Length: 377
Image (cartoon, rainbow, N blue to C red; front, side, top):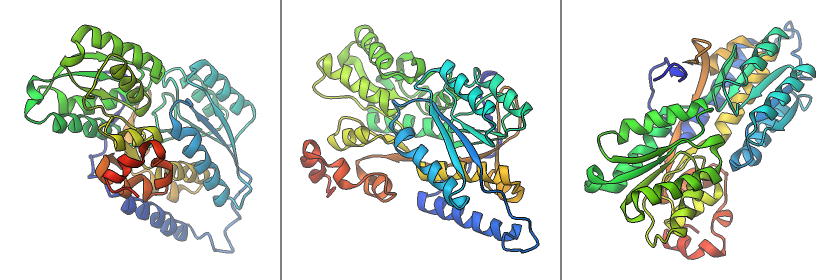
């Protein structure tokens, strides 16, 4: 990895099934609460009127507005008897806007900040100012630079490995001679390097990487333009698969392939389990997406934030048993949530079982026949 790439220092543990991971997280918190003696009358009452600042990076990724914010808000409220509040802002893919939002949270003297950075390096001065003001900062989903107190996300190298493996499996015996296009995420997002490294660990020397692009701010329109360049350079019929780092770009890639005249789409990967991506998977347009439990990540972040403010160090430490290195700090306490490759075969056992979507959400009139064909009803 290069000097800017965060490094996971804990051993890579096998991914737990989501249900088991959820049970572990929730039961673990319950045990820890018991250890801290929350019911002991001699223990001073914990502060509940907590203000949690939450900064999310964009609205193109559907999960942030639909799941992450509401889940964090709900969990903070439940942990504080309804007295805790979330002060929320979305940067809409602008690092400068997010920096202003961060500065406002510091000026407003919130108790803790959860930040999913648009630009990990650009946010660092704000993190230092928060630290100087005595405000803890927890990096959410993406690892920010600066003196952050903790990190909650997924095993992002594993995300890339799962995506890369899906391409190799889809190409089968033809993989070694197949030309693929890599549509990576934003270079300002440290997760991009981890996704790419994980994917390359599966793709390198197994396929021919004909073109590789970084996508400014994860913008679908940028991915679409780069896909047009790839088609012009490589040739539509010569593109055997497309590694797309997330679902927003996957949709743009598929649109451009169809615009160029593709009658049979090559395998295309994704990430985030956006509703439209799940529908594309049902229809056979997108091969897979990486499902990352929003519930476990968001609830974990909310709990870490509240525990940090309340000084519940045992509970906080129990949730952060991994460590991560950033370019500016070593040994950051981290909570890494498992990931799952979502395909046609396990839609029921992932997003439907977890209550992210209902069959009705997915199987609209446009996708009714495709849903019936795979027994999704």
